[in-house]
Length: 470
Image 1 (cartoon, rainbow, N blue to C red):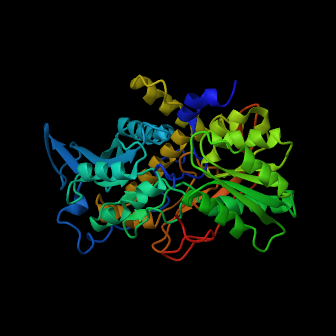
Image 2 (cartoon, helix red, strand yellow):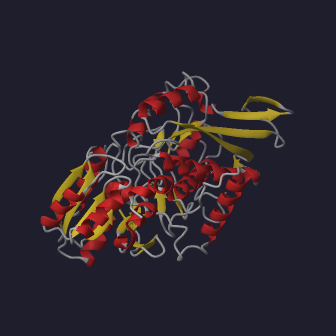
Image 3 (cartoon, rainbow, N blue to C red):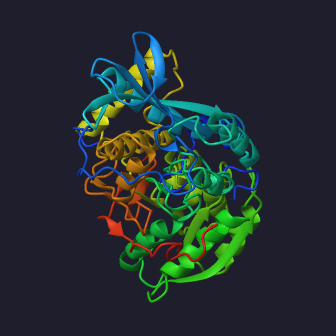
């Protein structure tokens, strides 16, 4: 069966293992999940210039069937914290709606178990997600409608998907003092607008490249790298990240080819040029079906490089479409593949699978697959949010942001054992650790082959070793 005939299946499963790019047309816990690494003091009052009432926006207490704004009450009352989200549920990037499945399943399980304890009271977490088809303008429209002119329509915004989508709304959300929680973008500073945003569990191209290069220095000393990437800012970040990562090593980037963004762009000519360059490593950083197409193209021209999946290509469902040609493909990741035989019996994976399957059954949603890496990402985001808000000491936007800026947790969601998510007030990027993973074409899963590799934190306002972020 040809790759092109599998397009619908790929769209339903595609994810970025460790790196999520823009969605615009140009594509630019632990077992005791209620615990947090540490409890931080209540946050400061809402920042100067914030709209009146913004600090407790999106909080609702229901007393005897009547709803009112938050502001006290007894333990018998029902309390709800509402978040909003915007994501693509149609078009080429519809598969990323699996992220929504992940966090909705997580919060449903927590709410059914009594909610999240914050400041001595239990709160249910509700996320109202809206489709934007991956279009940045639609993202802005969705948030304007959901939040209202003063940004008071919800407690915060969770997991806006796409670099361009995030960049288009980050400033407005910050101006209205709306927490922009865990933007789903691999750009180190894309969508992060201090002090009202903290990056999530998606690793950047810079972190991914640093991990892969550290492995290749040992496994393929002196290797020459050819980069295949999409045209535009997403491709820029991948190429820049590898050029920066090889500095001072025995490795070198000897060629780069860029291809138009598309669902199934023919990359044969560009792959052949990389083969002629003398490269013995191909970084495959193209989108959607172009990703496995490039792996097959290398075989067709008789080239057998070490293949590294980068950016949107770093996805088991995508890489797997290349069949046995994908055997041994490398990538960087910080989350477990729940289908990997190494992890199927891991306690966190077992609980995750059970609760996602229960949620899908309750909603009669057979398309929600626990094996979808997008779902894994959404689940991990929800666990990180829960840990942060539970440690905040009080229920307010400013207290949440204080907790997020002090986030320091391990074993969150489906993160590899020992992966640490850490933010500071001057460095809001929490995902700076990854492992190199290797694709097994028989099980169609990625398995880790290296220890954890860390990249250094950055001063506020910088974008890391890859240079300016897109």
